[in-house]
Length: 566
Image (cartoon, rainbow, N blue to C red; front, side, top):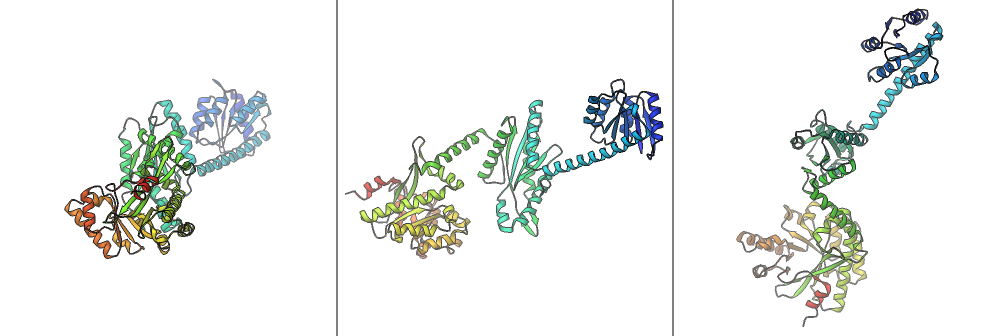
């Protein structure tokens, strides 16, 4: 056992040395120091088992030396305070500041000193164990168990500290939110076990991109966060983005599976974008959303303009939730004609007339309805309202036997396993022959959704028609037609727009010929000129639709124009 005595009184020091030697402690060495400076130097240079420290040590006192020693992170020696003063408050203050014991010099005997040293050593070991346990628990609390990165708790703590220090020092730092693109597909296709291993690989890739001053955390799932100071080098942010994109340009191999994983990144800086952690997170989230909206596999910096756009979208979402209840939705109808200009159909088109915002275009609110899931309720309302209107026309008006009412279906509706049953019930309730009803699904959704096949087969089995809308825009449309029960091909307006040109006209003619050879009806949408009309009639398009004949009309106007006209 090595002991260090720090005491300016030589008589007291000699007395303590003698007393120590009278104990049965296994003493290897006893060092002494008569000043705090010497004592501090020895304590830090050598490893002692115990330090006997005089409380009244000039030029200040032993208490200050105690504080200084305990402030050292790597200092782990037990300390016993000695004093001629029996003030209990002083003793308590020393214990609270890190001393293991406090004894009066007048009480120093071999037995008392031995007990104090043994107890102090044991107590100090216990304190060290508690400290180590606490440190380990803190590490576990701040560590992501899957990847070994810092976790969300650590991130939130560090972000708060970073904000305070940056505000105080008038410096800037960047928050990057990093999200693995379409990672749900990996879990769905390969299972969560492989998915977890893939996340470890992602964490390794991210780790290879960061430096000493950069803090990387996993927030949960496939979302990560990166904090780093900007300093004077404003170009460093773009360099970091380039590094990330380069790292994820190569595939990763997990359990023999090659995965092409990309990341989307949202970037916000303090104090340029926000003044607190909540707002900064929000700004980075908005930027991340923008990156995903623009096609993923890219980084986007936060912008005020896009923030305003997001606020408008949020406002739109709030209004949309109440639109059906407040009876703000209505259906417009755009007529469809045959080559003899006889009315043989119509397309039901959703419109939203807000009392304050006015007429809101479908391309503004339909994507919001899709993303929030509201499209399911809205879509069912459209089907029921359209069929109810069709019932009225069938019973009260004179419709051709081949009249068809086209209703659009969203991708979300096609995932509803009860869709066909709901449609069947409505057909029965309103006593509508199924042959008068047509459901449209866009070609892009047909291609991307294998789940559409079963739903469309069930709908087709009811006797309703199934139409492929925007035909010709998908890269593999022909190969997919065989997988579905299709009755109608609705040629995309982009072909009609350029139909005057030789190549587009040849392609348009070929699509019509191909469709007719397979006994599909054809619908040309977007007809706007005499030439469009003439060519479509020439190649034998079954149904003609477009502003050349009529724009979509409210039901009363539609009826007045086509059912009451003399």
